[in-house]
Length: 99
Image 1 (cartoon, rainbow, N blue to C red):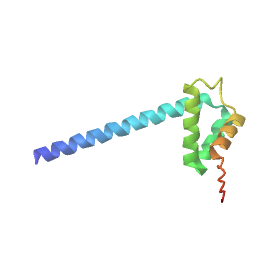
Image 2 (tube, one colour):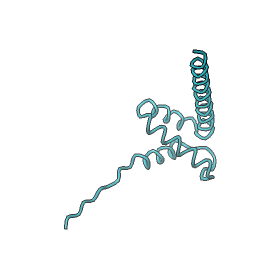
Image 3 (cartoon, rainbow, N blue to C red):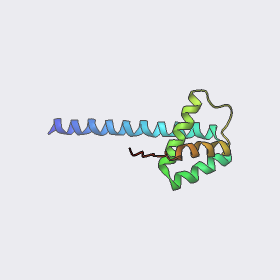
């Protein structure tokens, strides 16, 4: 029984560490996003997160990527955020040609 209890404790510790790391990464991401966006863009992203969490997550990833790759100069305005969101939501046209 002692070995089983030890394994459970180790697994529990691993899960707690993993959860803590994820929470820290999420906190760092939020801080970076808040630095990169102006007030209106932050509000838009917060509203989007309520309505469409997946799209908000994609937008955050794109913003962070743009920041890390040096594509951003200054803060992101509401207009630029709108453009990013438009590109993310564009539907690809499917053309079917019959021969």
